[in-house]
Length: 329
Image (cartoon, rainbow, N blue to C red; front, side, top):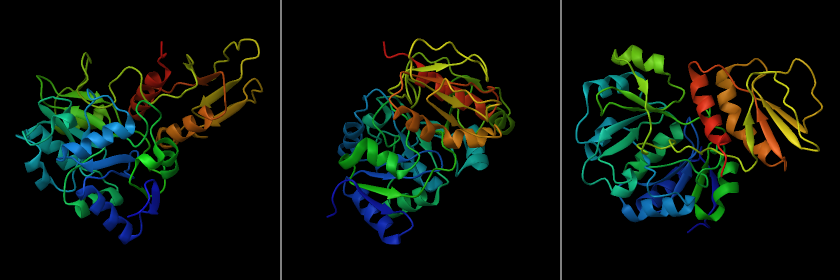
């Protein structure tokens, strides 16, 4: 047995073997994906799933995503798969796309928050896929952080947030995409994007040939739909435009999260994080959560955030920032 909270290099085959054994035995393992780090367990073991909810302090009404390494695994999870779902799998799996499918009875209700559907994706990250194959079971995995806080994009983020509540952490370096997967549901009358991600609305429409519209969320049908999520402890204000100079109040200790390099120095801020000197949205997304964490550690009174254009990947970035900025009260 190894101590809880142990971090092992994901490049070591023995680390993957140990992690797979932990999953099979009902334990929980944090592992890298191309989006963020996940906190994984055997998706078909209700006791293991309950451990994930307990470790994250996640409410039971928020469903999990189940990760698979092959399409054959879907036979254990989904009752039916539509033609549109198959087309999206052909185009984007493995990759950062989650599909909402009618679930089989054997999928625990805790995984799906009692819904008749299950969210499934096939990650592209080689460590994630190696772990799923080694475990031999579908792996249910939300982000590996305390519920509602900024998502983790490296092993240290997991250790900082969950510590010894995790049986093992696989360190696979920084996540290359940095925002969670796009979630699509074909269950209703129209295909819906339940959560925007790096696979864009335009890319999805091109594949399925139907109008895909963002869901009007009244109940939580997929992860990441709560009004406040991905949130810092520091209050966040989103500026109206890049380059806006807000009025700072009194001796307010303020930080700035900038989308691109500033045209001039601004000494009013205690600290400034630039997500991408060139304004490349892929770089912005990759650096977003790590930068939010660094700023949150600065004991600021307020964090000001520049917006980006809500096209393509920018839609996912602004979705995360708006949920982060929602007031606790």
